[in-house]
Structure formats: structure tokens, C-alpha cells
Length: 341
Image 1 (tube, rainbow, N blue to C red):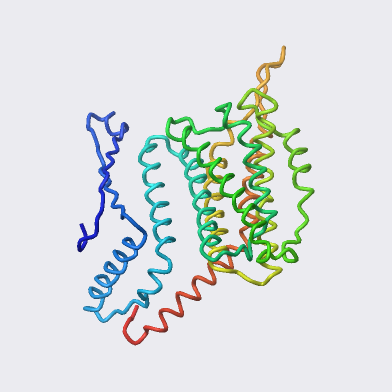
Image 2 (image 1 turned 120 degrees about the vertical axis):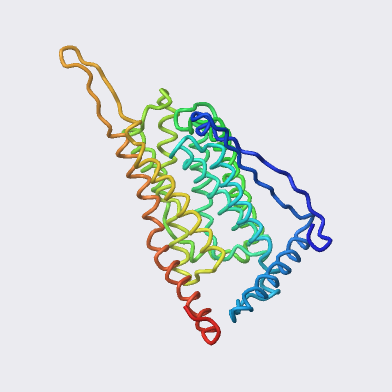
């Protein structure tokens, strides 16, 4: 307990089979401490921050974090903590599967990005700065991808946990994005239709056309393979309306910026995976008198789509990191009399 704070402590034990191969069993225990309510969690964060600042005060270091700020952003802190624990849980569950975990980790990160956006809308009762077109494109992409992932396993991670978690989080992303679309209609007085002016009607036909001629064959089903490839190319352009809207309005609101940054991280994971694994998508054909012929243009197209997904928000990330560095520098200047690096 923490100063009378009621908690529960579920423990998880992860067993690494890779270490068992050398005759040694390796277990990692993880204890999760969960509060009964958000208010209790905020109070615990305040107490922990006070102890942390008292410890740094011994060395003459002062951290500019107030109790008001902690209570204001306690839900976001809890959400990011759940993200970290979720990623840790997924990583240890699939410790021996190398890069295959990145596909599921990317989907978990994308789900948390939408939850951050949803918390902001519910708290502020405003959808200002959020693009309805971006939300609609994410829903369409998930619907296309689910035609493959719900009925086939060609593009799912080959480990048990990943194959089960990926569709769950993917559908969760679509559900949250759809709910945000409903909130955009209910809170239409806060929606900036003039700023959300990016023309997106070309994306679906272009994505479908490219997918028809370049889809892989991992599912051995033309329809499912085409729908999966279509979702990849829709995702390659799905963030353009949001970036366009933020630039048109000239408003890089912090929570929306965090959403875009988390989306960038998720897409970067996907790019790393497909860059290392695109050879798995190569096609093979046996011709009489020639032998086995292989070519891999589907893999090249998948890597290109993943790269576009990253590049579409890469320019924004430059300004995001620059702004974060600027704020960090301002905080350092505020305490320069007491802190020397």
C-alpha cells in the first residue's frame, strides 16, 4: 500500500523458452500496481513527485512540475504507463520471435494513439484540430485489412500471442476512430470544416488500383491479399488530412501532436519489420526447361507503402522534436541557477 492507498497487485511471470534450450529456466516477474480510481492514482503521483523532488533537492536540483499539472494529466500518465506495460508484456511473451513482434507492437501503439485522442475529446468536449477525413480513412483501412486478418493468417505474426492480439487491437482502432467520427457529428460546432479541406477522394481508387497489380500472395486468396495491400496504401496517405488541417489552422495542439507522434512510432515499427522481412513475400514459378523463377515486386511495393506511411508524417516529426527540444531548453533555463549540466 501507499499511505493508505488501496491497491491490487496482480503478478505475471514470463518464461523464456530460449533460455531453456541451454538447460536453464529463466523467469521474469512483473507486478502491476493499479489504483481503485483515477483520483487515488493522481494522489499517488503527487506523493511520488513530492518524494522525488525532495530527493533531488538534496543536490540543489528543482523540477518544475506542479501538483496541478499532475492532477490535470493523470489520465494521460496512466494511459502511457499502460502502453509501456503492454509493450513490455508483448515483448516478453514473444521474446524468442525476433522482429515478428514489431507488427503487434505497432498496432498496440496505434491503439494507444487513438485512446490519447479520445481522452482529449471527452475531456475538452471539443473536436477542434481533428480531421474527420483522417478518421474515416483509418476506419476504411481497418475494414479492408480485417478482410484478411480475421479469416486468414498470411500477414499475421506467426506466434500465438501476436496472432491473437493483432486483430483485437486493429478492430479497437477502428472502433475508437468510428466513435470519434460520431463525436465529430455531435460536437459539430467545434469542428473546423474549413481547415479540413484536404481532397482525399482519390486515395481509395489509387490504393485499390495499386493493390490489384502488386499484392502479395501470402493468403493464397486474391480477394484477401488485395484487401490487405489496399489497407497498406490507404494507410500510406491516411495522415495527410490531419497534417494538412494542422498546417492550415496553424494550431499544433499538444495532445493532437502526441497522437501524430505515436502514429509515427507505430509506422516506423512496421517499416523496420517489412524492410527486414520483405523477402518472405517473393513469388515463385516453375517453368519447363528454365527451372524455378522467383521475383519479389510485391515485397518492394509493401516496403514502398510502409516508407510512405513514415514519410507522410516525417516532416511533422521534425517540428515536433524541435518544439520538444525548445520546451526542454526553456525548462532548463528556468532552473539554470540551481542545475548545472
